[in-house]
Amino acid sequence: MKKNEQKNLHPNVINGRALAHDFLESVKKEIEAQSAEAKRAPGLATVLVGDHPASRIYVEAKRRKAEEMGIESFHYAIEDNISEADLVRVISDLNNDPEIDGILVQMPLPQHMNARHVLCAIDPLKDVDGFHPENAGRLLIGNPIFIPCTPKGVMHLINGCGIDVQGKHAVVVGRSTIVGKPMAALLTNEDATVTLCHQYTQDLEKITSQADILVVAIGQANFFGKKHIKPGAIVVDVGINRLADGTVTGDVNTNAVIDIVKGITPVPNGVGPMTIAMLMDNTRIAHALHTGLMGMPS
Ligand code: NDP
Image (cartoon, rainbow, N blue to C red; front, side, top):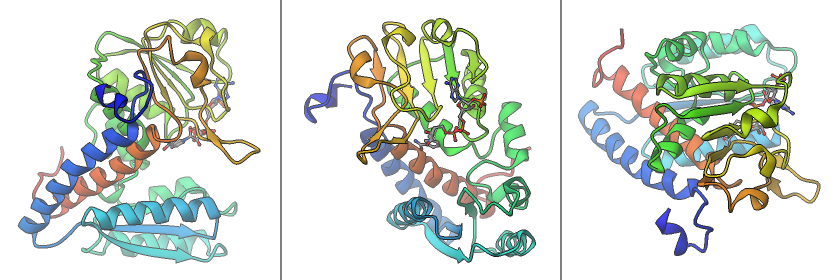
């Protein structure tokens, strides 16, 4: 975290934006080489159902980044009254389209749809979000293809700080299928001793304060303070919470703990930039698979 001095950041801040920038540079070079060899660029389809303002912003950011990376993006803006069956048909067409390597269906979907049905309709080899049950299962058995972007980004952040997780006690708070559960699986696969906590966990503070690595994703502003954290821990704050004054904050009260941790990700500019970087990397992997540059996994 030496670079922090130049940027006026506290030395214990893990600069996700800088790590994502460096990572994306290398992914961009790989995409250039792959595109030249395969004679076509990777194709990413983004599917946005309805007009949820935050979703629109997220999708636009992903498309912009894709274009910067040399990924061709194909956008499908769909009316929110589309039936689940018709949406599945759209996905099925994308599954069969040879120009499309990755399919991203932006969540949340309208109430009348079952998100699980929709996500299951995506070809697992185009599932760049890593939410299909086949990809979730692959991660669990330690043979992943597409790892969900946020936990994959968190692993890169931890490794990027030179932290070897082997043998460490890692505590994950939050057990969603997009963050907490795959995070626990990844840490387990890298030989950490993992405790996964949720709303029914008793004496949460006792558990989190034993963590060498603490990853929190509960969506409650400034919930975690000094009493939850072991001095010298690495803390990854996945939470994104918008306060009444419009500012965005994480799940950790960063100011209260910054001097006792070894490293902590800020919000914003921590996990967020890494998440989008991992989507680009997953699209690169999908392109390599579909163009025969990478062998199909067993
Ligand atoms: P979910 O609402 O799906 O899951 C929240 C989890 O937190 C649940 O498992 C819940 O437990 C647990 N939880 C809630 N309150 C407590 C508590 N007081 N003590 C212990 N556990 C608790 O959220 P997501 O996983 O989708 O997202 C979590 C946060 O991460 C949000 O702020 C979201 O915006 C952010 N996020 C950030 C991303 C990024 O790129 N930076 C990407 C994705 C999410 P239980 O299961 O028992 O209900």
